[in-house]
Length: 357
Image 1 (cartoon, one colour):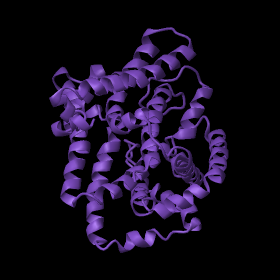
Image 2: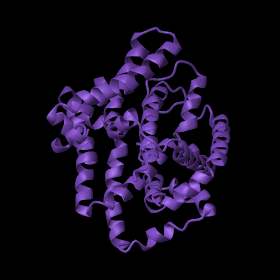
Image 3: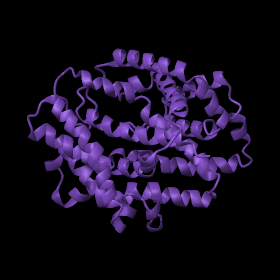
Image 4: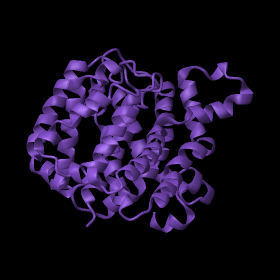
């Protein structure tokens, strides 16, 4: 039986990423890559502190769960083939077909446009257009590593052992995440946090793909929700004003404890209240990945225009930017998936699968 709440958490988190990027681009706390803030103190930046520690860790954990389910019906060869088309093609070929436009705005915001010779601007724009596609690049790498791990654990002994985790083990899984957050972090491209994201992916695959583990988390959903909200408020208050993407924040044990309580709360509440579907949920389940791929061009261009070419009130700027990314991104996805070459190179959708979309 399909676990609709897993699908719903995934697409809801993708929508959260869309909204997050509006606040990120206007952040006033020194996180690089944005258009800049409007004042020294921006209380709306609290949104960034509240969600940033956990939302990408959650997506990697969900990806690990989904990988387990996918491999129950696919060979290793088919799994890698599917992941290569879906993940590697959009994050490599797609850079030169579509994401170079993201690179254009990134370079403009960074003030480096005039420093780049005209004859190499296009490849530089393409490389600079990775944006949020770092997520799917890392997923592809993790998928390859997972196949190697499965060959080592060919009889699923470790997988079955992980299914026996009790409440104590589940609650304290933030400790390996905390340890992993200390290692394999890219020095400049700080989103490439290989350590913590790979451990989250493996926790999803080996532990949270078990029904009994999901049931255990569901039974503590209300306490976890209260703890997560309380810790989120405390975390935001404690770190507010500091660069929330800096290692001093992300590597702290408090950060990792908070993100884990938030993830447990979301999984438990999701299974309790959102294990159902609808036409909208079914559409988002199939489309959220493509919307994720195209959204950054929409949010980046919109925020760039609003910041530098309008004098609108602050609330209007945020409202227009949020509505634009939530409305235009799905529309752009629907347009691109109807153009065969773009459907494949930008979205990673094979021709024979278009009817499923």
